[in-house]
Image: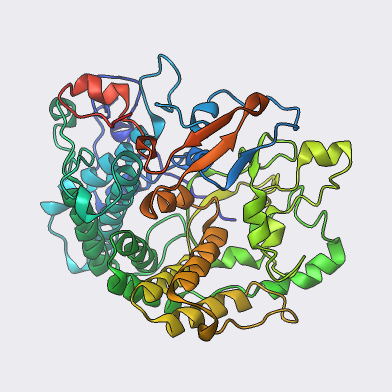
Length: 484
């Protein structure tokens, strides 16, 4: 997998998040400034997330359980997430790295856009200028999408005027103007996300793709489909997903069979070879959020593991018929000491891998489950079933695949099946399960933890919103906090 190299061209735009008085506490460290479009392209590259800003949210979902027999002691920084503490920050910690990382990306994007708004370019620079500008709009939309989905209510008619998040659209005088920030209304934030994505689409249309670590026209369409689905705009979601599907093909996982026959099932994905190292990698359109090697679900005896419920969804055709089972199956023998400590599941997407591996941000299969869901919600059940069958045919052993029939489903049961396939396809990708739980009604979730103590996130629990960090509300005393 190709590793993105961020060019440290501009020390002036390196920022620190170690203060607590301002939204970002951005402090230039010398007088160097960007000049050329290439300079600003390098600035923008520095704004793409280089570290995890979403993965801990997986601990709050129904995709995760605690294997209390593992014999391992979890890092205490993970516990607040798993038990849905009032704040995910440990006592005395002021800075929320998720908040900080996303606003850092926004600052970089705004820095580029501020300059480009007043810059005129000649024909020889037009292509690069539009490409960098389009990426900046996409990066800003991407960052606000996560912020508003972490720290505010889900999009809905009843929440349009609810507090969203602070929404700076410029980097000018950032050190002087970040006091007393205001949480813009939810509706305003979502409209800005859409506006930025539409502008990015126009600018990036026809531009050559540079890297799977950077936004391009295709990934902006997928992000637009995701946003539209979350907003209930099913027609736009289906149209944008269709654009992605025409440009990005699914991998037929039957191509794995020869490898599995050679290696055997138990040890096929271990050591330096993960599921992501197969042809499945070709489906991934955008990598994000830092290195995925040795993530908290990787280790065989890790405390936190994928749930058996998630694994069982890959077994509806029988054992070892759905190739996605290999992503979650530990193959541990349950009646042995090792089997008990390992538990029935693992997360085999990323193995040990001496080479760097990065988290999945956007991939082709998401377009299929987005369009299928949008179709069901528009009453186009036969079209949704076609999309499901296309997806499943690429996942199930050829000898076991049986096409789904529209007549076998009610609207309710078909939506349930679509959402189950979405759950499998996007599990541990891009923080989507937590975001889906929020938009799909905030259901009750129960986690069993140390000494078998049960922790419950009740239906519509206020803790479905992460708390505004102390560094922000100390600087903006009038800012409303999320209820607890």
